[in-house]
Length: 410
Image (spheres, rainbow, N blue to C red):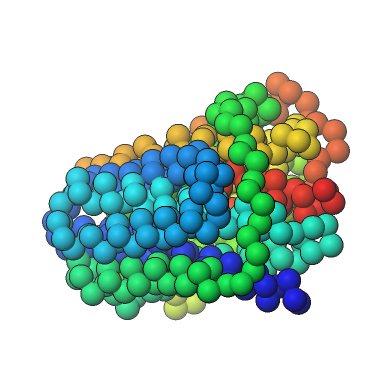
């Protein structure tokens, strides 16, 4: 308990970072529609965010080593606050793309500080408890960030000021804490193709996750708005997708551990294709009084959000214990390959063919993953005893090593 209290400042900062920056994407999408941005231009904003996020994942460990945890976190919090608060100053797509790139960089840097800090402070006796609490706080912030959208007015400076204040609040807990700073972390080596060498299937799967999740996260508000949902309904739609993803983690883990990763991946890919097919038909019906669009959002999250962890677990089955940092960095690289290009393409599809076209695009992506999984299933035998499945967030390259240390007693 004493350790939890000592790390409470860190956990509170995580909550503020997630709520502040997590609500920016949906708000930008809705604000862009109000300002006359095309869906393609709104997609560019999402692509810029993930490009900045990827650069931040690679660069920020060096910044932490150079300046220390506290200074690095202060830089990231200040950068995110400035980029958020500048949105109303110039309401042009190219300017917002620049700001979103800065925000993505800052988010990656903030998580790098937090996760390397946790990794340095924990040991075998407390790692499981603290990491579970960290994961709960991060998930709670994700849910709150989606619900915040219901109370914000798109394209209004007050809305951006509110989000900027929340992001800035992340500075206070760490600035006021008396906890001693951890030793500076070892900077991981960056081998972008490392995961592909371990498991081509894991690499392709993570690319598809990048295509899927970035499209939904950044462009789904456009789909929801053009499908006729009110702003409160859009917030509920986005929140249900997150809830669906959380609900899927336990069954995904059980199936992945009791059967194998490839069968689990096949099952979730088929499920994702069925859900995307149903949504693509733009079904206007209610089930037990609940509009299908909300049910579809929940099922979409349930089918797609666990796939990153399944792929990471599959790759870790082939990795040595001292290769987890390099594997995590490589996972982020392949995720970014899909995440950078997908929002722009999804926005174009919505603009050209209507709101359901985004889910048709995701359907095709999962169809490719399904075919490739079958091909790998027969090409290379399943490995020996797999390591236990763990939910792995897509934050920084430190997270996989943090999760694995928790289980392996390292």
